[in-house]
Length: 609
Ligand code: M6R
Image (cartoon, rainbow, N blue to C red):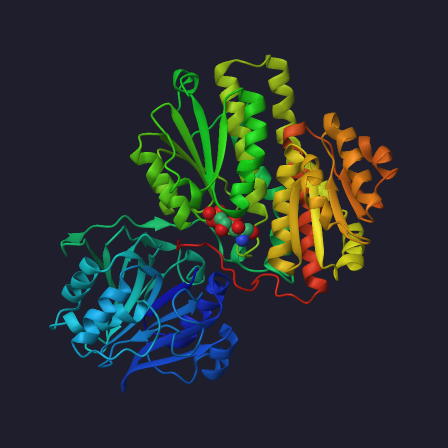
């Protein structure tokens, strides 16, 4: 949510900043701006609209001299997208320029306080308060001013700061919003996301809450909230530049859909050794697993939909109550947790604000926490008792695809690990399930090879006004994700219902020609789904069925069109059924001319509540 980049070095800063912002644009794209120091002072250029607008104004950065600067790409929270609300925000006297991710919750109070003291504000943003406060508290020492400000602001922030009095420095500080420092040779960087600077360096330091970084050409220094110096551990990022490039694909989303077989392999294969699940990230003993009274799964969006599958899969395998919560609800519903509760937190980015708050609530109540995360070293990963990484590589498209698949695989691994430790399943049965799990990457590859059929079907329905998804059990859980994928990138209204729930209201929405996608992969519930398909067809619906080869012939009796996915264990079937439906969403959005990787109103990694 919003992207920050900062640079100090020997190169012209503006092209470096714009290059970094291009990599971050998926995080927010309603306006962008840069501030650069040069011989004539501090210069700010910003513009409403996509980064291309700013890029055009600056001719790729060429027209803005200077070798020190900060940049931002915005997803509006306070104040509509406009030139004046874009970042950098500049203080009244022009001394400080600030870029900000997060939300300053007490900004109105602080703004009124400063206004009473004669400070003039120009924007509707919470960020301007930070710039104005920095100047207000500045008495010749920027670090002291930053400390005064961070002592007073409430909320979350990652801040990149430059000061007209210190043209050879970039400052950065963060709380509850990610920010890293990149270390180069004679040049240094700040960024909200490592992808922004991967082309320049892989050596990074992660800022902890309220730590401050001061960057100069020759190096970076770090301080804690009391301004005492801090020694930081340097990390080497393993992602390579190519992983964050489109690599010949038209969109990141299609690239990431196609990467799923490989990503699944990376998640699964190192964790099944000699017929056993080996989870290095978990320290739960057999006794602790036996002692669990329930498991909560907490997440947002697509990651929450993984939880929906997990409830069916884990309850079936473990015979233990599983509760699945949307993170934004969990934290405010006063959940009842204790040391016999395991809370599994799922997050691709590891930075989602509500999910992080849910994790903290779980820890506050003494629950055991385990997170499933993709981004190494992210806040959720570092604050959980145990962490399991999905190793999916960077996911850039706003619409999550390979994160979903790898998170699902991780859920299967955790469930089978617990079953193995508890010894509640005959060895042969467990071995069979593990073999099926290991085979998922190959099945996914086979499934994704059949793109043409889905493309054809999308061409017939890309003008639909509403599309409904139905299913039962894990097929219903997969429907939730299929429906989200379609609506978020194609803007077609879409809902997911359980087959059994249709008669209780939603069936009144069905009329002549309405498209219903029926996921019917669960053999034991197949006849029930056939009855539901007949019900919607009797009201004029057109039905696209998703099933397995074994059930295809029977389904063909009722569905207008069908797509068969490879069969596997029932609880793992969402890993197959989602693949054609990710493709369906992609092709529909593409045929409608939508901006697939940057859908309207959305941003990757929601770091505000
Ligand atoms: O990074 P997280 O997994 O915590 O993100 C959660 C959601 O914001 C994310 O899955 C979102 O729903 C995606 N746009 C779905 O495609």
